[in-house]
View 1 (cartoon, rainbow, N blue to C red):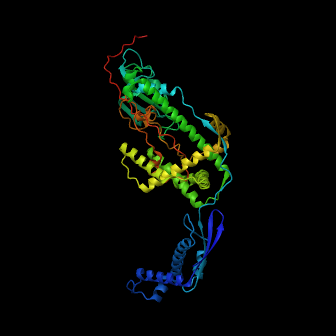
View 2 (spheres, rainbow, N blue to C red):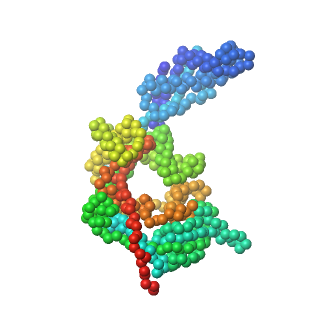
View 3 (cartoon, rainbow, N blue to C red):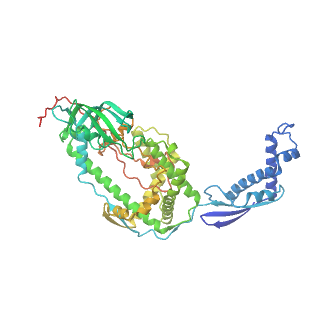
Length: 555
């Protein structure tokens, strides 16, 4: 088979393929045999239809079309293999298919043109000696005290209060029922779906419910019943109540206040595995310092990768762009699905097309970054030792086993992901070592970028009002949206897992999560180095109150 190659734009190779007569004849005869076996023609048994009758009933054009289709597909695969072409995806036929059918004769050669996408050639003008700025992240000196106070809040003792009205920070037990008043005085108010509960315990803090609800409870006394006006936000998820004023009939049944434990060694032993408060403080300080260091490193890498884009040129084939865009959308869909959003209803064909178009620039940049890093590794002979890959893979497997994670992990896939991570880490180490990085205070570059953003850009990238956006589709915070769902009469004596402070599990071995996470989804063309995983400490057990009601002198 004769094959002539031609270099085309957009990282494509053009192929002119001449199919010899014997291949044409074999393909034609094979199609005739298949039609003979499958054709259902009255008066003849399957497989026994005479050749001329078959051609007459099926049609010579249809038979030729099937033969040409088979010839093109098979000869293209053979040509790519014969010429040792690293093809990325499916071929594109450049010749007219109708012309090929009209030209086709079973005993004659057939010539056609096609193209295939191939890996792009990378031009990297500069990569050593880059000069960039990156924000330096420093630990917040007040963060340790905030975390300790958060633990105090979680382990606080709830003491009943009877001799004063409710105030902010109290914990109230209430019965409530909400309705939407009608503009028509003769019409009954509309009950709010899920807007009713008994013995519901909540902390009196701003943002817990819709605006006005908490403020209405403040000042009530135990045993008092009151009607509270509260308005649902315009952006509320439930359209039938969004933006409407509601009336809640609330009965305050009990009132409690928090009594915080002392910050001492006993407290440290209760909320952590440390024996002294000093050890707990030191652990928190060490962890927050490490987090700040990791974030600074991530900022350095991001700055270098961003600058690297200014020095790389490559014609990216559509095959790679489509793959990367699809991967990005799949990642977004998985994140939304994990938040409980029905992506099948959200992702309409129109929205998918819009998101694909919006994702193209970022997809192209990610591909270019990956190509640039690969070119640097090739030029500087940066490689990963197989022993490193094996050791790291085993470490990940051991850590997952220690955590009791039951995963069916493909060893080859794991090796591939670990190799990718280790190679990128080595390349970034080389780039940081051979670049000049000016560290600037946190917020400096972020603020500058925000100031450069114009209203025109925001309008161009914002979704149209009639089209759902991913951000608009995210569920509202649970406690702020309580009145939109069936409200469980559960207490809030113990904090939710989401509200846990950022303290680490002091003696637990930290797990590297990035590679294990990638095992469940194909890696993107470029994966930004993950920050250190945050392992929150287990929520401390709530203390049960054994005290009598605290009497507060009446004012």
